[in-house]
Length: 592
Image (cartoon, rainbow, N blue to C red; front, side, top):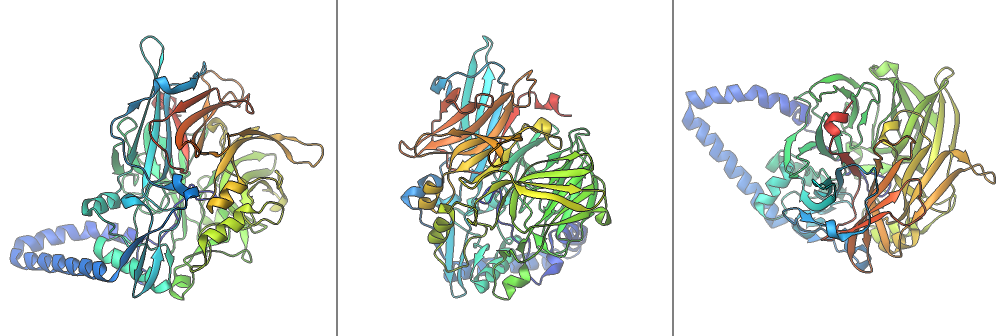
């Protein structure tokens, strides 16, 4: 999630306040413990067991009737300028789009799959509810995940064959709600405090979850398997060809808490570094998963004293990088009538550096200037320093304005502002942290104030190492202000080691999209046999709002400012979404 709803669903508590014995971990444990007991009870007294089951079913029917009579679901309206945030239907079987290529697929482009995740709410869009308890609403980063996929393959004659399909990620809560054929979960992310608390409790009593598992933020590959993720739950395994949703990936029962949307693969060992945040202790846990994806090799509670909404973890060759910034999730604050999620620039911000397999007391903390950082560009070691590159703003767009204020006006005002004092202006930022002296050697902006940028990517081969280049999506402030939500009118190539003489900022190249055309889900595609770091292409979903048509652009990373080398017309509209990835068909062979 960037400061514009990215990559992240808003994190919700995994169980109601004040019912600590129903945590996710204790639920997993107690259900295992209770099964044998219930089986024996059923054998010894089947009548009593049936009576208990009947009472439970009757209670659930009463709760459903109560919700239906007291809570009124309302569609959140979309403005004309927000039309491409509306959901679409699944198209079914893959559609051949080979004849819809403008330009050509370049030599060296690998056969593979371009996948983009994003919000695609069931039942027509995001909802709010009115009740005697007040109003509660979905936030703008919620909505069930839908994968939009473009397959690149070659036939026996060596000719490209390209096809498109889409499909919802069918989480447990997706299937539950779809079977009811109407909204069932009460919105529980923002609203009047009593309405949110009652939503938590009623969702939990009826379904065993306080909120839906949206799985709408990112996709990643590990050990030859593809996963869809959002950090309010564990990932779902996805069949790369059918897009069928498989198991929930809990690493064979060893990871029982939320899971970051941005895990990092160690460039040398191939192990996967993960983390998960939670609004009750332990607030932040870090894990390391084996190369084969079957074992959790390391798990540690970092013993933080607050739940920071940390969207991404960083790594270097030896260290893990933890961002503990003052965007927090606090159940007690909600109970007292405040927001569940809040940014407070008066609180501390710090970056933690720890050995890959370190314990909580091994973390070296560096106090830094408060700000809001969702996405890390890359981290690396250089002499005695750890260098962290990220996208940083002075304030946070999540969760949005205080409940009751006009959301559109609040977002519009924030998004139209540029300049050094603009609260949501997201700039490339660098921290240099000396591991010997424990000093912050430097922290500074690397890009200017003329434009905001987010959703950074690099050539994945350079994760955790020194890299020369990064790439971002560039916000169109005018269109974003009109819509009251971020729209990305171009791409940027960051020359991280080249400084402009006039102001000392890094060199930035721009790939500007046509008028009223906006992109999401940019990913780097490495050239087969490429030598240079930027041997490859940027691939992204784009939508032309004037024609209401969607496309996939392929932009040469070495010839960045020119026209796309290929533009592929898609058979259906693709709503704006979050993160994308390109997975080559031989990814099982290339996994470290």
